[in-house]
Image (tube, rainbow, N blue to C red):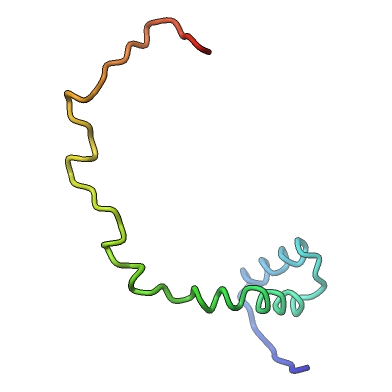
Length: 86
């Protein structure tokens, strides 16, 4: 078994301790092994966001007049009547 020494920031160590309690793993080494073996491929494939995902054509385009309804399309509602169907 290979050995390596890693240094983690205080915040990461605190989060690691929380994860140890939640997972009931015994050591940070076990936790690291689980994180790398279970989530390593996901991290590898999602680390870089392809430029095609950042393209503005993917986002819907809204024309300025589409955000608010036209005045003649607004229906008036009377809130003074009795509630029915409640």
